Length: 131
Image (cartoon, rainbow, N blue to C red):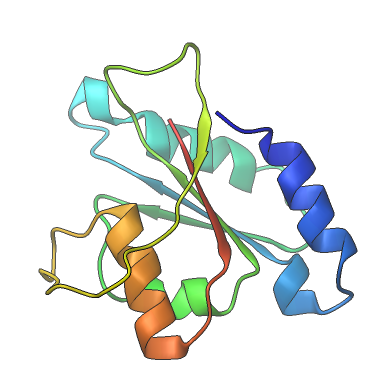
């Protein structure tokens, strides 16, 4: 578990570049499945706050098109539900894979999406998963 606020503040303070300071939040899951609706619900709440430099995307699943949005952000936070883990939530930094191994069009994990972003756009935003 990491202190996400400290990591975000440190990264933002290193640069005045608006891309580096921008935050992309991707809340994903299927609200129709009550156990899987946490991501979209949290993302809607964050979106309603209208924070400067924060872009919110609400999706049923992660898709390759998210890599384009990730490349434009300095920090990416994925929000999803999980049955296990530290309570009530935690952040984990994603490292990305060393080598891209073949992506499905509709079966991406946050870590695979980070790798795809780095491979295609040669950029690697600080990426955290919030569960």
